[in-house]
Length: 356
Image (cartoon, rainbow, N blue to C red; front, side):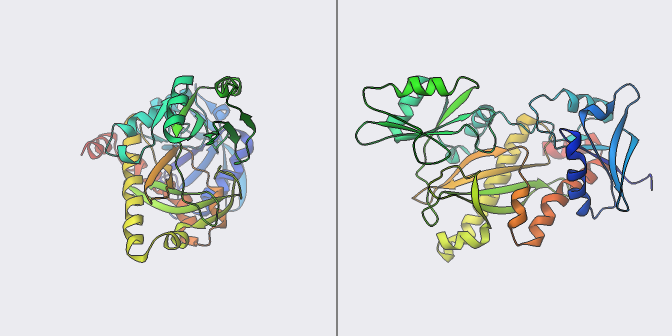
């Protein structure tokens, strides 16, 4: 029994241990030993963790040696804990070490890659950049560099009369700045707490007059290779632009044929797969060992595909409403497959395969 790999799932706080562990254990087909733990559960001096396990339906709190592999599901800008763990258990034995992505760094990385045509024009936020993009595109989005779930993303648009409207989540404006009023001053007042970037507004193709995006979940499999696990469409509430606050979630296989002719559907899906995997590979060159991420796409009115953003800790609860059982399984089983792969692979083997 002790020869089975011990896979640790690092979570943010103790209240998440049972919930997260139960989800992943349900889809474990590799007979792994799984334990959930928090940074506070680590005894650095003795190199042990006080972790939660589920054995034959019984919850146990026990002391374990450091895991063979650690899967980081703790969402935190600070990486000191996961770095110390990797130093203790070996290089590349922790994956998704960084999962709270710096969107500005990623933008620059993607912009300099082969994925440049899929990336909206973006600048660090300042008054000049907002003015330039607003004049050029008439709509811009101002978003935090460390954003998630669409929080604090502002939509700024300029009307034909010269008024500037500032919206949050919904299309209904929170503020309307007339021509003689400074919209830039209002934005500066709103954006005092974080660093922001400003992005070209895309005139998104709508589904039944609703905004939607396509979220592609990319995960590494038991061979350590990037693969697409799910394609989902998130449909926003009526009159909302924030698809993170979605009313409906569909398997993209249901929606794409509605948007495109049959002869274009296969090519479009293939593009989603190829671009998503390429984005994951590019991101990994900067961020380090990753096992999963999601790529959010928008389609504009001309049918062009745009990468909106990458997410390092994909929200998995959104998949519960999708009927496909296979997709739900993969969402949770693939990280365990990759952890199994890492537990049986030496650092030198992984380094050489990544260099190829």
